[in-house]
Length: 130
Image (cartoon, rainbow, N blue to C red):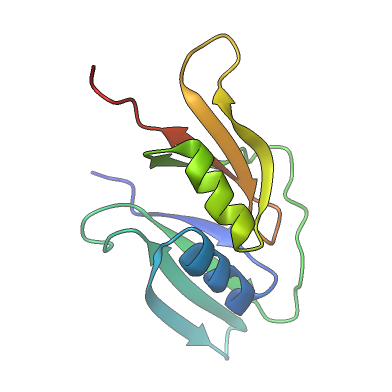
């Protein structure tokens, strides 16, 4: 068994695909439009669905925003350099909500950015072998 994807409801599919592909560097893997059921999907990720878990972005026709609720936390992405990743997100118009630095009470370097719908994405800096 393995995790296949995490689904996020988004208010503007094109805007969200642009953020995840152009700002975070994911690939658009596939799309589906279901006019009869009034929704569209876009799957994005760093590798294909056959290799790793991906994100399913779901746009429900006519719904431009959602209450994110208190249960969802964030998506985590491993990156080589959290500060450089934040700088790249900011340079492409993205929002950095926590600058790169050690997690409270620890030494792991993390940062947080936010997608256009308000979902938090945590960058976790990969520790280099000493």
